[in-house]
Length: 179
Image (cartoon, rainbow, N blue to C red; front, side, top):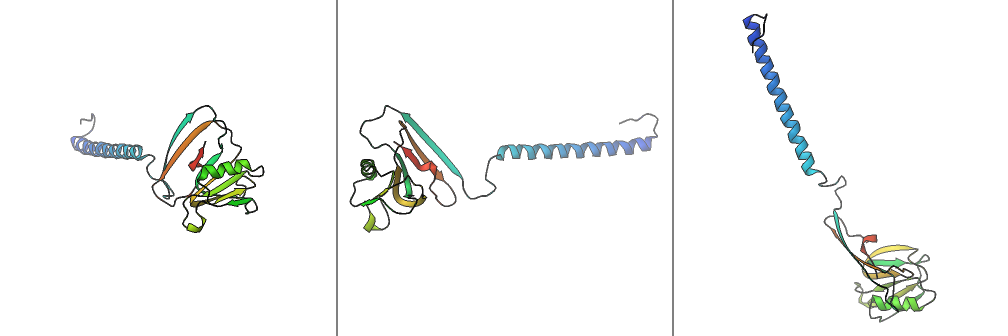
């Protein structure tokens, strides 16, 4: 570190200052690079609310429509509520959700249905509730209840599995299966 036109003592002092400044800049640059790499690596980890982390896998297959089958939207763990919160009809000892859907299809006034597949109250298991509308009153998350709506003509079968790692389980459009 030689500076022309400067006395030797000043040259020595300026060289030490330049070396310290260079070392400080190198440390700062290394720290910035480390922080940048850490941010890039952790990008997308966690969330600001910290309540739910969801992974969804969807499998879709397409085929020709089947004649004389119950076509509609099936929603697991969901109670379909009518606009006026009443049921068109209540059927007891119905075999399964498909049979409940068929019963709805056979009733000209039925647009939606709920089937108690595996409810906590044994008294109401295998009950089928026919609705005059297609869940206009809402969709209430209810374990063991399968609901559906008629007049869905899609020939695509979609199965969606949602895994929630934290937070409470809530029903959503993700658990719909169109058949």
